[in-house]
Image 1 (spheres, one colour):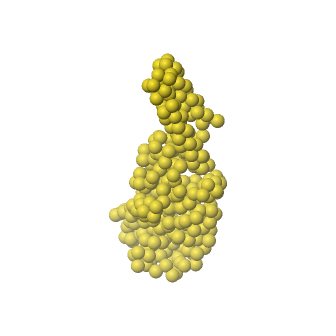
Image 2: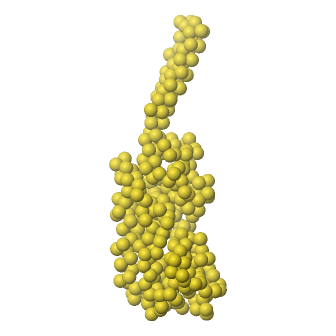
Image 3: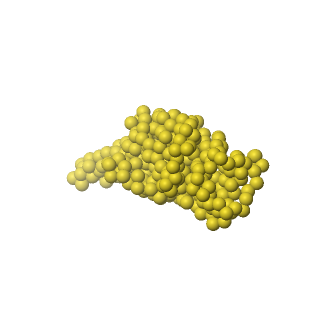
Length: 323
């Protein structure tokens, strides 16, 4: 069925799940972002790309790789940099030819006290197309923006629809801006969006949902998802997940099949039903045959046969799950 279940308890617990939280990048999307647009403000486009390439090549983030690939396709040459800093979950910064460069999310740029008014229309244009914006500042002045898009997985909408039909509440957890996240959620039919979340904050949001009485399954793929996967009631990693996420997960979707998530609920429900049926069979035989054997109504050999039949019925009933 495309499922690797590492923990039998997790399989049983799946039947109790009422909320499924999805990480966006690499889970709902293909994890192959690409540059869609480069906008410059009072700077040459080639120089802006050269600066961005110089910094982004020192990062392993998927968005950084997208910028580097775009720069290479346009024969952009990198420059030497100094004082490189990875602002985890926010962006990157470095000194390039004596100028302080920051490439970051809109939220981080705002936190630095830099006005976004000059690029407001560009931000709205990106949001309308569900493009993720990267803002580039030089000496605290916005000089450019790069739009990144990560295609949504073809089967993602179907997987969300199947969960909705089962009455499962779906949530998307992402570091993207609220407008971009809302646009993607609308395409997929996801009911709740938690946006602009730093990697370290994801587990807190899972805990908040649990405190509200929800039983939560988390679906993720990256190394940043390991802590939040460990926090969820059931953790699910997609097939292309980072090793850390796979080790933290209870269940792995082999081959990255999103459709397998709804199957989990079906399988879990049927397993729980079989457990209850088998308990009835096993206890029923004991309650019926043992007293009869004790009071001499049944001879010992008949009791032994009865107990053997009980075991056979339990096994056969379990094997029926294969159907």
